[in-house]
Image: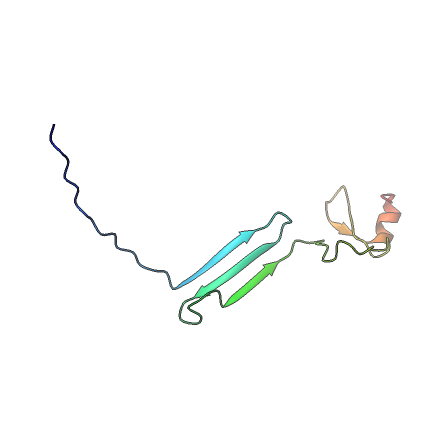
Length: 90
């Protein structure tokens, strides 16, 4: 049996200088990290966080019923307390 000869083939790698990294969390928030190596060579120069509609920013706080938003079962849209009471949802 003859031994195989391996030849080194260098890989050409071009480093990206401008790109976005988008991450979706379990709670529905979307984080966008923007990188530009000319502006900041060590990390992102801007971070954006997009929250879903109806996101509760303070989950430990007790929200009164009159300030809560409810979902209309027919349309799937958010409605206020007064409208939910008129529809009989509450």
